[in-house]
Structures are given as structure tokens and as C-alpha cells.
Length: 419
Ligand SMILES: *Cc1c(COP(=O)(O)O)cnc(C)c1O
Image 1 (cartoon, protein in one colour):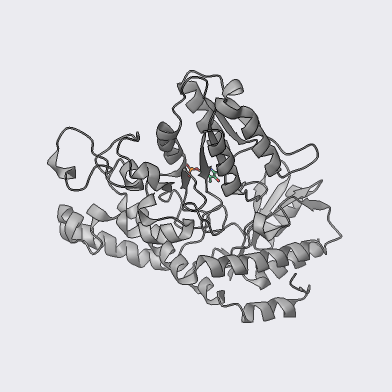
Image 2 (image 1 turned 90 degrees about the vertical axis):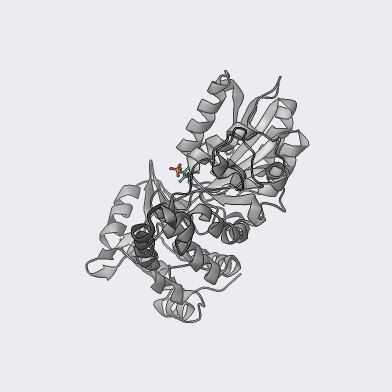
């Protein structure tokens, strides 16, 4: 247990010895009264890397200079643009480079993957998910089961926190999987719950799903770039994510998928086809017959959205330089410091609903207010502190290790203490 102090001097000394401190220089910060805001919203929309505008300009110049020839002659040829992301993404999610690809956006990818991993047969048609999942995931599951002719109230099993609790007991998830048994087709859970910040034991959930013959897939919107993952070693079947939260790749930025190699390397395993998923050697032969290329890249349909991927490229370079291990180490300490400071506050009444165990959370603390929540949130905003408000009464604060400082966290505490 690190020993923290509620003082500005302590926060400053932590910043001075923080090896990741210089990374904040690589980002643009919104301004408040002529000063950088204290930005705690990196879990909702990450900040813009300063290198994006230069890289975007270069890409525009290649388009102007080459026209269609840019597919092969651009500095980063568009024909194989998605390849430039695989190695760096693979490191971030713990997979082989052939098991990941940057493509589409998150909810689209969830639907695309479900065409492969949700094919109900006989009595096996149920999907298990967490109650209160991100709305987009709820809508996706609801319409998927409807598409196959099932009633969502019957086909979707939702796991809730126990009475009076906020986080979901993993034992309850495992028990429900066992109980569903051969009726269960698929488990789909958000790796980190967006509301509470709870990080689930993906390996344990996957093992249970496999035990009853179901697939396990995860929405990693709030996990990627936040918590080091080992998707391959944990034997996860599939996953998808967006890149505009912790990954700082811009609004509507390109998403990505992971598919375990046992499916990616099996050309018989069903996936919806498109020319970009086809074998690259025959892609331009315009022949009949979809021949999936190797790996997750075979789930691609359209050619790469190059301009959308420029920011992703810039952002992944920063992650490569910082390192997920170093980021998680700082993240644990910084989030721990925030938690320590919040626990000193006596003038406001709120409860922290994020797990206290650093292994079960990332860079996030969710505060549940009994009263005055909205007023507190507005006061923070007026003080140049950008947090996130979730109806009906939660303030989420994400101290992101790439660009947040101990002094940011201290300032938040100071403003709250003097309300
Ligand atoms: C942010 C988020 C989304 C957003 O989906 P898009 O398709 O990228 O708009 C979906 N699911 C979860 C869990 C999220 O956190």
C-alpha cells in the first residue's frame, strides 16, 4: 500500500519522479480562462495527439500528388494500410498480430462478429450479458436475437449486482453460465463496465463459457489502452473495441477486432465477405468465390478509411513509446491517489462504486452522489475540471496516466473540499 499525503507538495514530488510526465506535452488540452483544463474525460474521448495535424497533412499531400496511385505509392500505401496497426494493437491487447485488425467502428464490429459467433442451433440460443451494459451493446443483443426469431426477454440472460451492491460478483456470472448450460450460445460482456469501472476476470468467464460449449466475446471499449490484456492466452474467442476513449484516436475513430487464431486460420469458419477480407493475391482479380485471407483481417469488408486512421496511427505511436506496463503502473498509483484523496472529503456525501482492488479496475473512479451530484459536477466544470456526468447521479473521473498528473488529481480534491 503506497503512502499518500493530501498536500500539493506531495503531488508535485510525485510528478517530478513520474517517468511518464513528459508524455503530456504530446497532447492538446482544451482551455479554460486561458489555462489547460484538468481533463478527466479520457475514458469518454481521449485528447488529440499534437502529431495528428502533421500526419494528416502528409496524407492529404499524398492524395493530391498521387491520386489513385497512392494505393501503392503513398508513404504508407493505402492498399495495405490496415497492416500498419496490427503489431502495435497486438501488443496492447495481448494477441498475435494476425489475430487483430483495425476496422469499422465498435457497434458495427459487434454485429459483424455476431454473424460468426451467434448462430443459434437447436436449443442453444441464449446470450448472457451484464445488466446495465452500455446501451449500444444492449440494442445490438436485442436486435440480434430478434433477427433469429427469438424473444429478447427469453433469449438474453442479464446478470445484475446483488441487492444493495453496485459491482457484479463474478461468482454470479459463473453460476449463471453453468445454469444456462447447453442453452447458452454466447457470453458478451463489457471488459470494463463503463459505469462502475469494474474490470471483469475475462479468463475465468471465458473458461466457464467454454465449459458449457458457448463462445465468449468482450466489448473492450473501456479496457483497451487502459488495462494490459492477454486475449490470446486467456483463450478469448473474439473481442472488439473503439479507439477514441483511452486510445486517443479521435471522435468516431476506427475501431478494431480480435479473433482467436483457431477461427481466423479456419477458412471454413463463417464470416461475412467483402473484398478487403479476401486473399490479397486475388483481391483485384475480380473473380467469383470469397477466399478469406488469414486471421482477423479476413473479417474486413471495405477498404481502409485512411483519414480516419491517421489519428489512430499517431496515438498508437505514443502508446508504443510509453508501454502498457508502465502506463498501468502509473495508473494504479494515480487512481489510488485519487481514491485516497476522495476518502478524506467530509463536506460532501458520496460513495465510490468502483472496485477498490487495482487488479479489478483501470483509470477510473465513479462517485455516486446521494444529493447535489449535478451541482458538484457543474462546480467542477466552472473550476476548469472536466469530469463526466452519468444520469441519474454519478460523476466519473478518469485520471489517465498518459496525460494526467498528480497535481490534476490534487486540484480536483481541493475544489471538492472547499465546496
Ligand atoms: C463507447 C462504447 C460504445 C460506443 O460504440 P460506437 O459504435 O463506437 O459508437 C459501445 N459500447 C461500449 C461498451 C462503449 O463503452
